[in-house]
Length: 523
Image (cartoon, rainbow, N blue to C red; front, side):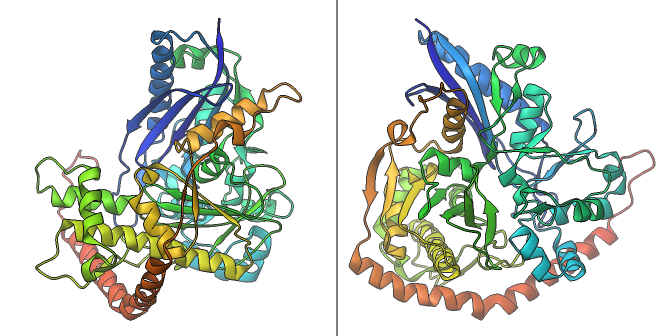
């Protein structure tokens, strides 16, 4: 007997993940492809969008072939997609990229454009129209950066994609984008009207045909014959529009009701609070939700899991890197406070609520007695302090937080999530399935093709498995350290900014002194 299922694929910063899910939410198979982003210059974070489709094809084939080898006669009823964002992937009319995709807020290249657009349009007008101030998270200034720095690429660009819409285009031939992703294209989207704002689109994205807008769970089209041959998915299977990964993560754990807060533990840390109205504050991001009728106030740290990966690679000394379980055990042994270490986790600048692309990582308290476990724990504690800073800002802006749900790869084991609960003083629910965004869009795909009255329930698909309760004594001790954490940025910001400026000057001098390429070589 055949088994109906949905396929979900998410394109993340460090990997792409796919999941095949039965109609009752049971995971039939998972698959992953690792990849790296490119950092051609300080502040530039890019990726070739062709990798996104290549990895989707590989994941789809692996999941479907694996299910059949396991004896499952699977029938794919629908496909869901999501990805990191907001990204700026510009392509010509034939779906050929004109340059690598510029990634979300971790890419800080467009600071000059952010400043100029803010002056030209007025900060109050930008917030009134788009919900948020222009920051490195906004896609609009990055489109302007391309026009100003790479005019030949801009001249060939006709369409704007993000990972989910790139996959939809390859699967169905449709050119669409979900409303949530569009709401992060500030200043091009009108948050109140739920549509592109034509005057500013014409001013800052001339020549671009902007995509048709749908909601994340809407069916965008069906799999074409060509895409079916490549992926193994039958022609005619519906494909939903999809959305940005963090919002798909929230769907995956049912955290999209008013008062819900999702905390995503990944390469970066992300927080999404669902609100009963549009809540605006300059240091956070106001968006529409993944689902129609929802609004959100969100925040994101530029690095979290990325720091732990960096430490793991750093301490390997060229040998085999220690495993995460080994490092977590050493971090647990280090104890609360990391034996006197305190870290600012701004290794790639910082997004919310600091909004400082020139912030950098800082570690204070180092002695010759400290080991890698202390450093590793200080990174976990630093990200927890960053979560608390974001939480305090969300609440101060008026967001109601009644329930916290944790999701993502960082929820494996209990140390990191326990540290976050102890630092914030908030309990966290951890669902049975923490696969994340790919599972969320598989659910949206199942919902899109469900018969009337037979809609799936995420509570049934993914019930709560654990609760991480804060320890009152640990919270009191962490609160004292948190005061120093907040003071550390203020005390070091001027020095850090001066060092960043010096590094830019040195990089410019080095580039100017470099020999010109020989005749016939590519510049």
